[in-house]
Length: 71
Image (tube, rainbow, N blue to C red; front, top):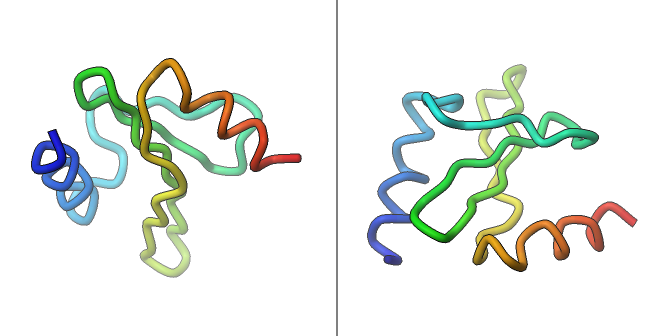
């Protein structure tokens, strides 16, 4: 699973908004991609050509952790 997640993150370098990614409601330019039961939450900073991975976690936990970060 780690290798699959790493490949999907690497692919963000060439396509920061791949098919199937979704913008997270209420997030500051936060997006998520699915990798099996896991989610990768990341931010795209187009002005600097930067992708910042915020969280990686199981789908049952990721949004709970994300809400704690935004507090």
